Length: 402
Image 1 (cartoon, helix red, strand yellow):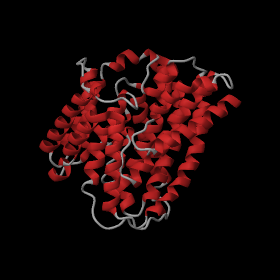
Image 2 (cartoon, one colour; image 1 turned 30 degrees about the vertical axis):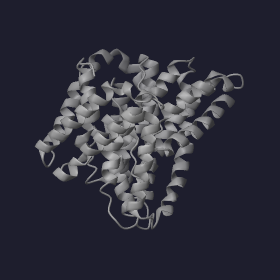
Image 3 (cartoon, helix red, strand yellow; image 1 turned 60 degrees about the horizontal axis):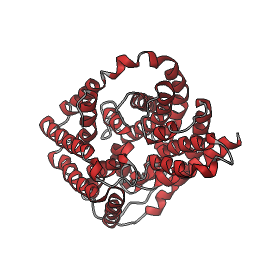
């Protein structure tokens, strides 16, 4: 038990660092733990390192909403949620955005715990029948997003062009630096599409006074959106080749970020956290590694899944409380000039891109920013830019190398 608690504490600290630092993912922290695990093994044993990795991943899924809300910097896992979250901040409701996100992640943790056990028992036998249909599901989801947009032709064009950029980015990812691992290329790709392109159009004036008057969603609505997000997160946590970014795009068909921004934030946060739990279930049931943390876990002697789930639930409880407390930082942004803040954030993004991905990353960032600037000009939803992730996954599922 001492090893579990120590691992959870270390994981929470690392998850806070990655969640609050734009461009840094829990995968990076898992790699760091692998590098220094020799310091922990003599004191606590291998379960400490494993629990720390999983606790860091869970913690990250709670806190990555904060840079998205107050700085407008998307996390690769929840890129689309930056749009409604930052918009709420500009309306003086940034604290509400963070709080409803924390609720979505907390409820998803409670649902995902028994769901993980059910998946381990039931799904391995039907997995071969599921794998082949992933590309068709994504094709259908992408088609619905395009057909029901205000301008299907422009949505299709943005979807295909962003998809071509995604294929190019993944195919030539070896040209970039891999300071944060091979998945680092997602940072400039999605930040250009959903971060800088939004910040460049930031209005003048100052950030309005941030206030908290309670969230406006009923418990029934909150649970419904959490359930939708958890199902989406469960699917991408189990099915090969999918990511949280894919779940965000598919969720647009069920919960509109334009008409119900709070519901969409809840759903995407729930999907993010549920995906973390279900990716662990996929590792134990099928030996499939859905992210860098699972790959790091698979490289060492694993404790029982009950030990890891216990550490994850403790981390979820502690991080929920921490996220609520950190949401009060919203008041620190009162009166800050929007334009000046946007310029500072863009400079930070460019610097991080160079550190993580080098010159190739800067090239991808510039191209992604150009494409991400098209949707508002063509009066289409920015979700069409998710072709950057969805098209490469479709090609992969159809057996076409990317």
